[in-house]
Each structure stands twice: as C-alpha cells, then as structure tokens.
Image (tube, rainbow, N blue to C red; front, side, top):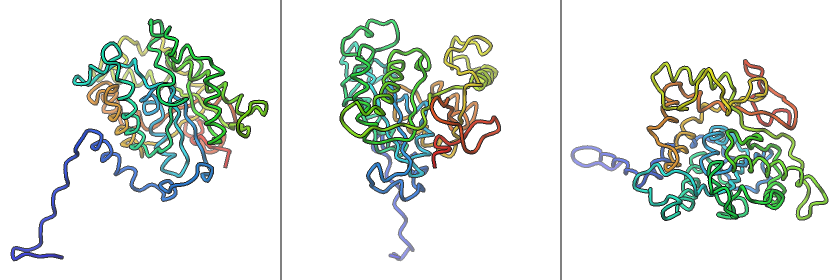
Length: 339
C-alpha cells in the first residue's frame, strides 16, 4: 500500500459514463459478471450443447418479449442467436434531439437502431445477432394499412420463400434445437410480425428438407410462439387502472376484448428469469428511440414488480411439453425434454 504522511491515498472516484450507451452497459454488468465461464468463452456455435434461435421483426421486439429469457440462457452457456428482419426504419422517435432521424425527415432511424440493438444485446450477454439477409435487406413496413406497406422493398412485400431461404442458411449453420417467433397474427397484427412468423415457419420446413440445397438439413425440435396469457394481461391492467395509470394499454378495457392476449389454455411455458430483470431493463433503455424510460413500460414494472418483466410466456407448437412445471402446470425450460 502506498502511503503519504496523512495516511493511505484515497481511491479515485469511478469515472462517470461518457455516454448513455456506456451507462446502460454498466448497469447490466453487475447482472452478467457472474455468468458461467463457458458462456463468456469464445467458442464455435456447435460446441454449445444448447442452441436457441429467435426471429423478430424490428430492433427492440426481442428485448420486450424475450429479453429476460435471452439473458438467462446466454448466462447459462446456451448459444443464443437473434435474427432481426428489418432495421425498424418506420418507428417513432421518442428522443426529442433525434427526431430528425424519422422516416419522413432524414430517414436515418434504421441505421441508428442498429447501434441500439448492438448495445441491447451486449446488455443481455448475446453475442450472435444478425439481420435477415444483412442490414437493410428488408425495410420496415410500418403499421398495417399505411402506404408504407406497399413499398416494394418492405418486408411485407417480400417473397416468403426467398426470405425463408435466407433464414435457412442461419438455421443450418446454427442448428438450433429451439426456435422462438410470433404467432400467426404477429402478436398484435403488425405486418412485419406476421411476415416474420410466415418466414420463420417456412424456413423450418425448408431447413429440414434435403431437396433444399446448400447446407446439411436440420430439424428444429421445439418451436415456440411468444404469448401473453389472457388472465395475466387482464390482472395487470386492472392493477394499473387501480393505481391510477390510464396510459398503459390506453383505450383497452381489462374486461373487454384483448386481441394481443393468448387464451390461458394455449400457454404451455413460463420461463422465470427474474434474476435477469436488470439486464432486460438495461437493454430496454438501450432502445432509447423506441422506449421511454419514464413511459408506460417502466411504469408497468414499478407498479407490478419484477415478475412482469422477468417471467416470459410461450406457446409450444412443435415438440412435447416436458421437464419441471410451475404452479400453473406450465413447463419452465424451453429445452425441457431435450437434454
């Protein structure tokens, strides 16, 4: 120890983050620093006995729906691969100083969101993230019914088999046992979500077909669609309304029709990753142009607790429900029955 006449030298204060991105990564670091060494080691993807592939439409979809799941499996040594189908060029811009990036102005939001996604994936500990066909191959289609749906370069207009062939390349390279994507309605009817579902499900067929050239055929054993249990969503909305929150799910009645909800009896799986909520919230903050840190997503967390972000639900559509079950009889591991 170096000393001076007045005693030991005081430790220098930790430097402040130089950017919002650095702050996000620091926040997540405490969650991820205790991961298993094998999860941090550089390895060929096929060296990992567990391999998970997720197919999403835009940057931020993966974090909102599966962020805690991704962080949990990445930390345990599972090779997690994310394929994002568009850059999200048509999204809103919630950061006032970045509004010029919007599609109707400079149209630079997509490239900006590439960086947001990279930061979010670092927060979750996911190192393998790709854009379908490369960044910018397919453009964000915008919400259903808008003129942007008709652009020839948008994902909604893509030939499903052509796009699926691009995903087949990833499936045959990564050889995942488990794939996660949306249901046939894309969760809430967004054209890019619906198209991501179609492309993912078609790619599964093509990847297993020996008549499809390039690469060895691969059969994915378990396929899941993201799900929000009907009862879970209604109860959460009721508690929010009781707490005076009228903005989250604005215009929706917890006693009425909820098109984004999945009937409870169809929800087969609940992944409890509450230990990774901080990583998920850090990744959400990384998607700053899309998610306001003081907006409804974070209000939802504050009002309902970590479980609202840390327990993520799925509907198994290929494979068998197996392994441990929770109090609702749902399996708790996407890889249940495969080990």
